[in-house]
Length: 412
Image (cartoon, rainbow, N blue to C red; front, top):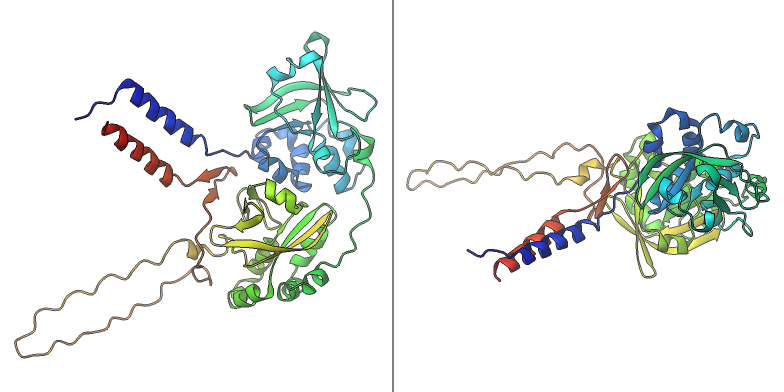
């Protein structure tokens, strides 16, 4: 029997921890704020403007939440949904600021980039927030284009997960003339016409006959990215599509669009889960974006589709072509698990000598299915999501690697 030395055991434990650390637990800002009723209005508009989905996709982020009383001033301005999104984007800092860090800001002042600045629509310094450690232990916050005024102050820490997510409360909404400016005129692009003219006519015609088209059009001004299956792919899928319910058809069509603008460059940089227009709650009708060099793929638990081209890319709208139809697991659950093999027929008793045995063919009835879809050829995506929106990697590979290391060390 081989006895591992202390150094060998330490090496194995360190290696195991290193591997397990590669699984990153995502956060769900909606679920976090749901625990605090005083932030219900702020939380509502994070969802309404689709900022919640963008926050959940970020690894390092600070959300400056404002309670219901503090939201009164901005609600009184009756801003458009796009202007409200810009204002709330100022409250999402692209860095980690926990309570301790706020009181240890070098030289007393920090200029933090925000999600508003990351959109590319903020000019100059209007997308930055000034954070200043004031006398008496107070910390002030103000939009950089607000003339140096710090109208808000740090109230308390709500939730900290060093060094990925910090949710803090500030006393009031940050004001910015540029963020509150009226949104540009609504897009006049004809979505279905663009798709029909570039190889996606079957999908476009199907979309036009569904209530899903209105959902698409309602989201264009705030940002919309459409993934359109090419004609050959959607024609092949049509028999399955026709067997869906009306609600199922609408959900499938809506699951081919994301309620934010995503340029190709942004898609190449944002691996991970993305909510779609069909998403209603954590981990429902979502997609996993993966890229390898210039190739970007979209995965559900059932299929993998590759982006084959760009039909249109002009903020706030982007349309890309796909080589496959995206199948949400919520509509095609039966394809997630293989049909069990039929039990072998019992062997007949030995027949008398001279007699011929007859082989009786057993008929196996088709197993009932929860969906009209056949099992797809593609493997399921390598990742799934739990109820909190956390990305969970397949653990089988990790166990195998750790066991292999143990076996090697045992032979030393």
